[in-house]
Length: 378
Ligand SMILES: Cc1ncc(COP(=O)(O)O)c(C=O)c1O
Image (tube, rainbow, N blue to C red):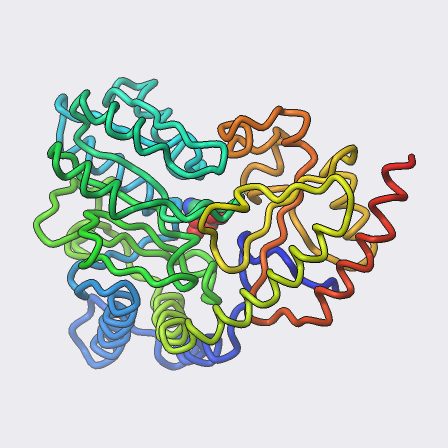
């Protein structure tokens, strides 16, 4: 199998998480809404996991709604807000959001559920705070800014953004899918109103996520059905996945500083090596970034060509977010940062995880040292 360097796309399921999930694919199969012993067993597991997810972001268990993943959480935040606000709704979102927010905001705009305005980023990929202050004058009701970007890994200045939005009476949703479990997140300290996260980015299972809804924040549901999840998200809960999500959050909380130190060391090694190659640029390099994300442009080589060559040499890397790579469009994040579409198509994303080793980074650098001049000469 290839050396895996695409941890922003998804992460390997932690064996301890798999163990935590296993009983709920066997004898412990109750429906959490049933009042008999089987049901109550499942209810206990769901609520225990809710406590663990809440603890990782310093929220309260009652503020956590389980969803099918980051995409649903982001959609629920934006659409639920529009349904709640009716004609008063106005959305402000950054141009570098993941499609889970971007496409949802475009839908809201097209269907006239609300007016949508877009915030620019600087050439480093950080939200432009001057632009935020200006656009807040149009009195949006909800601002959506990601905590950390999935392509460049840039961490956004949330405290300033939230303070500015709240001063104008706007709520703030943050897509924290790439941040939760990788950097400390504290909903109480930040005061954020809505936060989306997803288990498979932090060594949990796919298809399970959560939306944090600050106590008192009003949001209408997007789905219609039973009374599950505080009447906010109907449907029988995915108990095994929720148990896994809880376990993954508990482990991430315990191991965060150790994982971060290890991954930072690896990224340092990688970027030092990349700087020895000619005509390589690391996007967002001077901005605060996630410990494991490095998005690099290789002058003169198409990203896709280099990605395929690396794949053949045994490395799984990405040309950008897994959700946009199928479209083969250059990263909208890089173009929003002012990178030309031609240069944006020459970028490769390396995203490191706790399982990666120094030896793997040395192997990657040695492969790049051979491939880059070879591909350039073609
Ligand atoms: C920043 C960001 N938001 C949202 C999502 C979507 O999450 P999910 O795959 O759980 O739907 C992703 C996944 O890549 C992401 O990186």
